[in-house]
Length: 505
Image 1: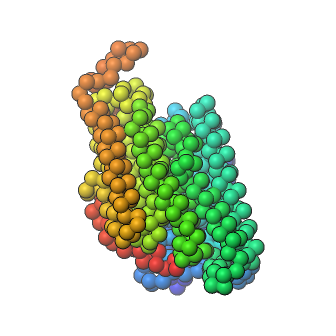
Image 2: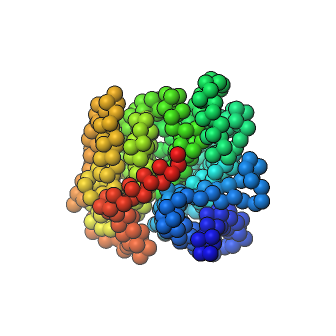
Image 3: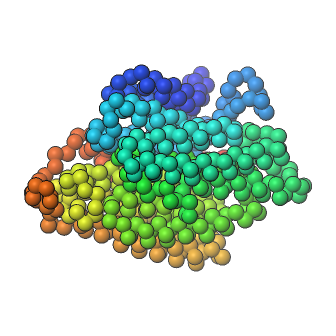
């Protein structure tokens, strides 16, 4: 009986987050904030219980909504990988929302604070739905909800840079959404199904018969490229630096760590549960992912090394990290996909930490975001300095932290692919060197004893010790521990994700 009840939790998570959005509209900003934190916590707890049950039973299950079976009914599918991703996303979102709580008081107009929490709740709804849905058109619907809510989170700050960034984000994202929808329409015309498992059976028959090959490849190409655009794969990343660099602290942390990962997780499901990985390999689209992934690694790292704005530097680093993920897909092996999944976890845990830490360093430096004016910030805000250093070391791939495991997994996956081994290893090495250049430059500056002197007051900020907000200490500690867990306890996490990925097929 317990198992039967827990099986309802994924649907409860979607409904709870969906209805908490409109409810926030009639609440004050403070009450909406408490509701938001409570909802994220509740969804995280339910996701943990689902993960425990699914891991214990050893089998995924399909939850049918309503009384109508396939192909008319709608379903969600729950396995270890889905439940773990839902739990992990909730942890990241909770820490990011608490970490940016103090800054939101000055970044968002009080009368519109509850609108911000509507967007956050809807974003969580879309992420959970993208993780669990077993219906391709339902996935598209929540892709659009994800897009609109993310755009609202960018523009809520309401200055020229965020409005421009949100418009650019919307244009690029709608282009990707249009391609995804066209791909789904082509696929529906070929198979007559929208449920993922039914589509896969039909695609397997089409591929075996050798019929309708061109339209099938068009559908695959449209869906893959559409999601690549939405997740900011190079060269479709132009909206990203401003969107992450000028939005609120919480928005930057959530957008960089979760939004693009929801699209990428849907792409993994399309690879394995909609089209079939063998058909994807035959389509050769993974070779494009490999090329553009490596290009993104290089371009993002070079652009980050040229930046003097710390938040834009971190944003350009995200372009490089998205490149890592698509490079792993481009290897065309299960090990490569597994490395990409682990990098999703590593990047989410690290990039949100960096954005929250950068906000603390800026706060104790007269509000400046210029790296050259953060001199000595690590002494003024010690916890933020330590947190930023941990995030930087993880991005570099220093042992003990999550980024090290990601790069090891990519290298191991590349060794099995003779034709792509050398380009992969060279790209990993060059990207790591560039990571060291721009992240260690920032770390050295924030720990240089000479302080930044305010032009207005002449006050030397080296002499000022910032009072740490209690919630920030909790958030920094949580993110650092999460990085250490991913770096020191990687084996059980890799095994869980591998087992879940194996159940996709």
